[in-house]
Structures are given as structure tokens and as C-alpha cells.
Image 1: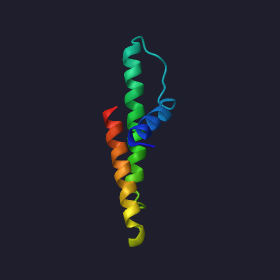
Image 2 (image 1 turned 135 degrees about the vertical axis):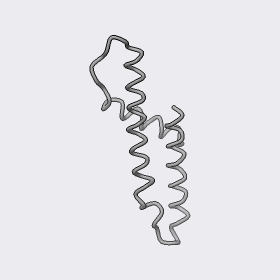
Image 3 (image 1 turned 135 degrees about the horizontal axis):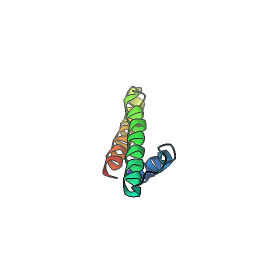
Image 4 (image 1 turned 120 degrees about the vertical axis):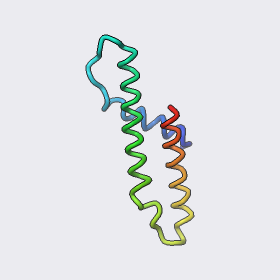
Length: 82
């Protein structure tokens, strides 16, 4: 899955958890849900990047860990661009 596909998937998955009763202004409502979903997805990705599990691998696995870390950083960038 590409970083942009993963970013969109994460934001979409969090949308159902950021719902709150509709306000009178549907446009504001939609923007708030999108922004809240993005923030949840960013928190999740930051947790993945910052756990240290990806960067504290034995040397023989470090190249793979570096690739995974770079992937998640790209996902984060894509979420920020949504």
C-alpha cells in the first residue's frame, strides 16, 4: 500500500470516532470531522514512528527498519496534506 493510500485509509477509519451531533452549519461540521480524523491518524502514526521498535533492531534488520520508518514518515506527510 502506498503512503497516500495508507494515509487516506487511516483518516477514513478514524472518521467514525470523531462524530458529534450536527451543528447548524454542515460545512463546519464536515471540516471538523475531517480535521479531527486527521489528528487521530497523526497521533497513531507518531506512536508507530516513536516507539523505537523500528529503529532499535539488530544491525542485520536495521535496513528494513529504516525503510519502515521512512514509509511511516511519508504516511504522516500525506495525512498532513489531506
